[in-house]
Length: 256
Image 1 (cartoon, one colour):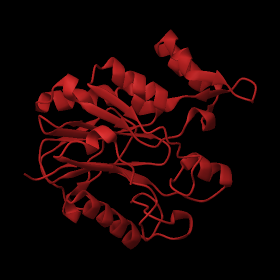
Image 2: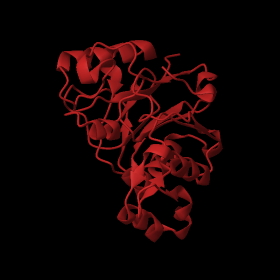
Image 3: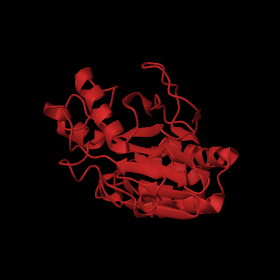
Image 4: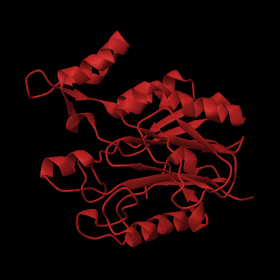
C-alpha cells in the first residue's frame, strides 16, 4: 500500500492507498480487487476486502464502503452496518475508533482526511461530478460538525487519473467554465481538435486548499499509466475489456 507521509506520522491513524498487490482475484481483476460492483467472483472480493481490513488492523466486518453515486452525500458512521446494507453516498466520516472507512476508485480521486488531535477521520470519492458538486466541502463540514478543527485537518489525494491521460470533449470543459471562468486553468488542448486534457487531481487539490485545511498532500500517481499497480476504467474502456476492478483507499482510528 501507498501511504501519506503526514498521516503515517500520526500514531492514532492507520491508513493506506491500496494497490492491486496482495489480492486473490485473477484475470482482468488480477490482484486486490475490492469492488463488489464488479463481475469478479464475490468470494475473491470479500477476501481482498478482508485482507485490507487486516492491514488496517480493524475487524473484517468493520471495513465499510458506501454505494458510490458521484454525489456530495456524506455518511456519518457510528457503527458497522450489515452486509448488503451500505447506504448511498460518496464520503464517510467518523469519530469512532476501530472502524475502517473505504473508498473505491478506478480513475476517480480518493481523498483520505484526518484531524489526529480531535480523532476525526474521513474518506471521499471525487470523480469530476463529485468534485465540482461539493463532496470535498461537504466532507470537511461533516468533520467540523464532529469536532475537527479546520486548520488541523490533513487531506491526502491518492492515485487518480492524470491530466496526461484524461481527454475530454468541449461540452465537458464548458460545464466547468460555466461554474467559474478560472476553471480554464485545469484544461489544456489535446492532440484531438476541440478536445482537452483535464487536470482532475489539480482541481481537487485546489478545492481542498481553498477550504483552508491544514495540509493538502498529493501522491501524484496516475491510475491509467500504471496497470501493474492500479485498475483504470478508462484504460479498460480503451482496451475493449468487459469489466474492471476497483482499488480501495482506507483509513481508521486506532483503538486506544
